[in-house]
Image (cartoon, rainbow, N blue to C red; front, side):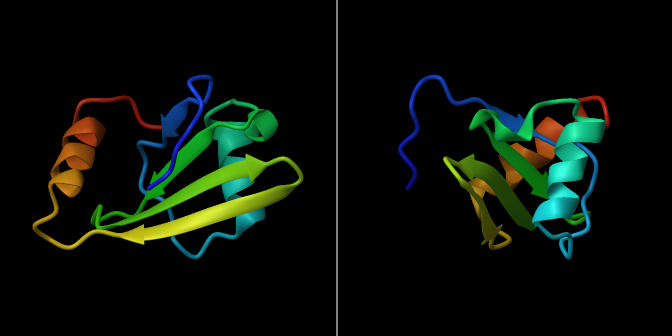
Amino acid sequence: MMHLPASVRVYLCLSPCDMRRSFDGLHRLVRDHLELDPFAGHLYLFANKRRDRLKILYWDRDVWKRAPTRFPPQNPARAVLRSAWKSSERC
């Protein structure tokens, strides 16, 4: 469980992402496609095409952190993420 201050925003990249991307690759996605500042301290979420894996990228004071997550098929969070992607603009 992550406890976040109220000032932290969570951004969801709506296009499927290659899960082999490094910190630099995810950083470029945030900067170029989402057109956001990757060093602002917000969370950036990326998922694969099947929507069963998720990477969370965030800048923690002076170091990149990346939290990989895998959802089991029956997890309710997976259904929520799928519905969010279906109805939104692609990055």
